[in-house]
Image 1: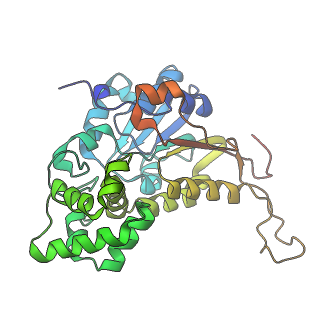
Image 2 (image 1 turned 60 degrees about the horizontal axis):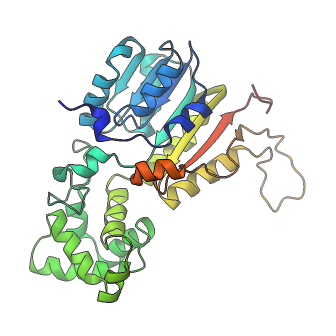
Length: 323
């Protein structure tokens, strides 16, 4: 089997390691294990003497990552779970907390490049898009063949951020009256033809890019997963522990920014209240005032890193002071 590293180039690798500061004897979590790039770098930075929890919804990715992390087998604990359910894994391991966590919310190159996963509009395959086909979630084909115009347009507009969402949704509904939409190239062609010829000529990206993104986010409930994680991670970080999150979508980045900002506030009283009565203390310190972006060199070597944004925060002690 090919080296898993050849299938995926890890985004913002050194930056994540530098922020998490892995140390021997500490415990870390990679909530989006993928090909294990971040996990391997964390373990090596800790001289192979840290423990790592790795989660992924994709069983294929888990298997490949296990091979890549084989030399650290005694220190790695891999679970077939979405990152929103990380607490179940911590409880099973009987870990009282973790010293660092990373999420890379991007889709892996392996998933994009394998046509039968249904993520790519560049190769024909079943219109699936589920990161875990055993999850019980509905595939993209079911969404495009059953949703009403308004629901479909909302997904394409909000999650895909496509200004042509209404016309694209209308084109999908017209086509499915003739035949069921079951393949990626079938959908890509419908979306492309919904664009006016001039827009197609001037478009920097393939016209189907945003529609496929929107459907993928909806199929896998990615924003709900992230919200659940953000609600629970602070309580499971040890004081001084850090959480690093890489996002590729403005809605994800805004959710991370908002959650970090709220947790960094001392006062949680309503904004209309004149005086503070909550006696609150901040839970986090935001370490990245602005998101850290890939370098020009990284974007040149790995074009898929474009759009990545890294935000990092540190858990404070109960009195609101740094550990």
